[in-house]
Image (cartoon, rainbow, N blue to C red; front, side, top):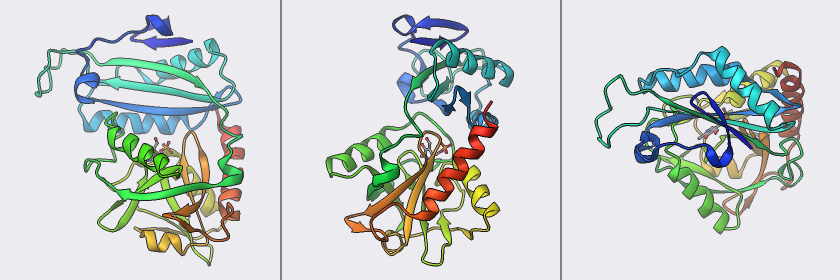
Length: 283
Ligand code: PLP
């Protein structure tokens, strides 16, 4: 496996970052995950736009241009022979003596990227659907920034698994925010798709915006507003979206079956259309 670190392409075991890197000590870093289908990058421009926003919010300089970023992604796809999978990208504030104060500007960001081959289109949840448990959203209040502070999300997903579920949907002040690494949706009996509106409480999913655009083009009604676990239990269907899972059906929440317990037609349709468009637009 070839890994990119600050300008070098290295074998996995030689790719190294300092123990004084601020991502290691403070989770002072942002990341992106771009999926690869048919050897090509999906929604690359959207991921770059969100990366710039995350970096801007935290006052970290982009380490390379978007053109260079595209070259690095493509080289990792080629060198690792990725037909289907993901490219993970992380920008850290840099390496500095441990101090809560952000270091002076002369500290250079560290840039790391690696590739993961993974079957994405062929996903068992498409047939089976995910079982979800709800859990309190104990993350910090700037979930709109894609930082590597993922401990609570990772913990919540692990607790969900220990509970026999596949993922957790997080609840803040009585309303679902999102999944541990995905945006959350329900579909009402009349076909209306409901997902929480964008704010500092959720990540602005690149897949979310593409899927909502598909829904609107298909004349499906979309409501961007908060919804509760009770409303999800009573929904006709439910699903989640993310770059690596596309549109992923949900069939159970907190032990209650959603709809008839099988993945629903709206999720299936959106997955198909999203995949079709993504394949055609991938670069
Ligand atoms: N919400 C959270 C908390 C996430 O971590 C992610 C993806 O990692 C998403 C939503 C989905 O975003 P995207 O569609 O850009 O992958």
